Image (cartoon, rainbow, N blue to C red; front, top):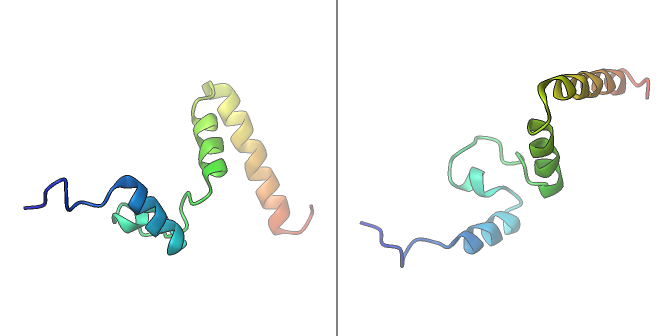
Length: 76
């Protein structure tokens, strides 16, 4: 049985994830994507979007979808 003493600290997990260029979630097996939410600023943006009222969130996501579509076909 693992005790608190032999379990890695959160700070150690963060440092290891940074060294390995991945996320703590990936190291813990919570996701199969190693690149998911490595960028704290992107994570904060996503949280801000989730906190918007429904109508504003829908409008913003539609705008982002259109921008991505245009970027993919090199219109921007």
